[in-house]
Image 1 (cartoon, helix red, strand yellow):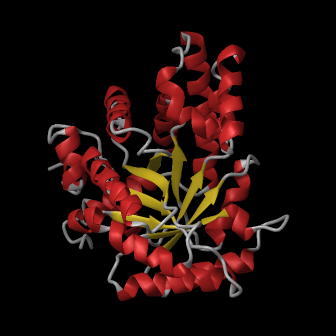
Image 2 (spheres, rainbow, N blue to C red):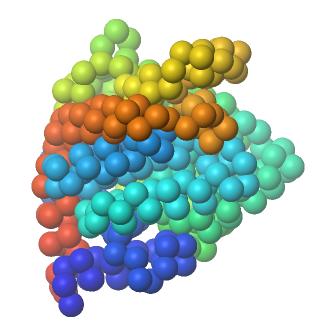
Image 3 (cartoon, helix red, strand yellow):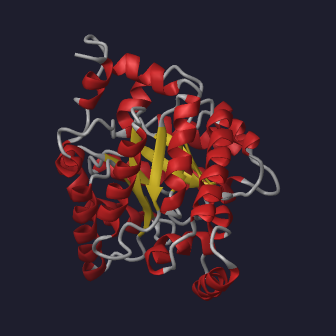
Length: 347
């Protein structure tokens, strides 16, 4: 059995059910990659797919850097078929390119705004669809809830993930007088009491900065999460140079979602007459235009061949810089060698 065959055997059941047992694309749960790369000074890179034309460039960068890569669907519940179409698009692009480096697919962050029964029931139905679509990681944004509400909501929603033993990521709830670290500790303690397994605690870079990164605060968050066996992820929405991402790695962050530059990059692929209405709708909705693009893309005119090539090239360049800054070079080979060992810790 080859190294790839051994790694493919670790794919979650929901992934195999979606892409078929004959697929050669190693779509894994990120927990396997965290274990394989535990002693490697790097953070798992996760990039949002805001336009599907960017996929060849993003995947190409992972091959060029021999890197593991996460791809996020920002709005998996936008409609009933959104999550399934996303997984199909990623898998088709990976198959076409012969991509054999480890990938993981993230759904969200999905915003949880209420603990009303009707809201939670609808969200849980959506999470069942996300799991069936083939995602191994689901991210829940709890920032609009109090600590008590956040624990209640996650406990009500986590069933589809616990049943399949998939990974969960949560963001801290509203910050009270105790500050960010206290909010994180209260959330993780509450979830541990309910035996809710959390893989990542996701913190926005905006909560860690006051003009510049508060490294000490970030390290406190990392230590607080580590005490509960949880890794920290940073949601980096800045449009600055990728080189600054190394500060997160140095502080002990294990996953970085780098979305800032990719939205404007994807949006520019469309001509002004298409782009401007998207920007107007995004402003009215109070969200970044590039993020809204991921919801509206299928209703927009298709990109010209030249625009698709440009989008692919720019996505490749941005992703390559991100992977390098996060220390992900050669992480694919390292993780696959570990996961293929017969005596490896795969439990």
